[in-house]
Image (cartoon, rainbow, N blue to C red):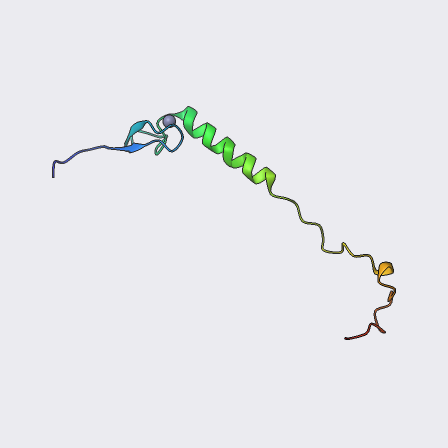
Length: 74
Ligand SMILES: [Zn+2]
């Protein structure tokens, strides 16, 4: 095989072939722009994760067994 110092990889953002080597700080992206776009997309995804509450969504007063000691097992 021919010895190549840089092989081409497809940019995950735009699909453009760009060299994968230490001189390309944006790899596997082709440019800073594509990397920024991808990171922004990731940030948006993380923002969309629904924040779950503390888990105490059922008020005790609603089941009629407020103290909990006499709660029927069945
Ligand atoms: Zn790109």
